[in-house]
Amino acid sequence: MFYYERKLKKEDFSQIIGVDEVGRGALAGPVVAAAVLLKKKKFKNRIYDSKVLSPSQRLKAYDEITKNSYYGVGVINEEIIDRLGIREATSKAMENAVGDLIRVLNRMRLLSKKVFILTDGDLKLNIPYSYKSIYSLDKKSLSCASASIVAKIIRDKIMAIYDSVYSDYDFLKNKGYGTKKHIHTIKKYGISSIHRKTFRPIRTIDKK
Image (cartoon, rainbow, N blue to C red; front, side):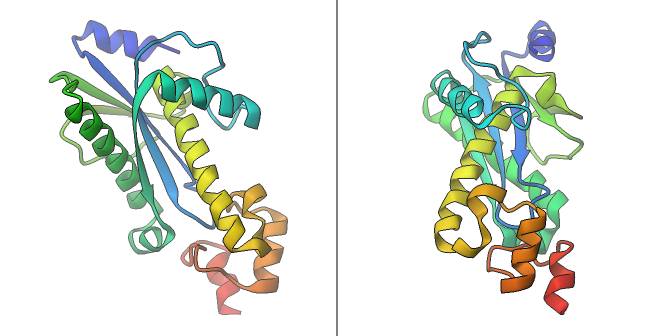
């Protein structure tokens, strides 16, 4: 899980930042990205792709990661997702997460001149740093796995807040994803203000 970080260290990059996103395929709510610079490479809790971990494993890992890293977060809401498209919106969330972390490092006077960004997926980023995008990197890089966990926990917290506002949609459980029950609820009550109107089946249901 530390192969890419070790390889880049040998190439003289002193700070390797992992970036990942959560919520790209949801029907409601934001897409959230996190950028993580780890302070250590050995953890007590399992650090892996957030989708694989149980809720309790994610929470324990999140607590350990946030105590042993510098991190930034990018949140792009459903209105911007509908306007830009999910691909561009996801790139924007990642760029914002990197920018947020860079501001943290600058503020603490810790930013190195030799920064490399590792991102999960295949997206192009408009950032002033060298970067590489690799599929399933959250299963191959400790930094990206950490970013996936941070992004997941933060997005889940956002959806829990939305659940209290839009109680009919059960966002606390489905997190905005297109479960059968969620789609049935949309057909019954219509769409909420946080549903992505350009996504299928939302746009089909909305026309009925």
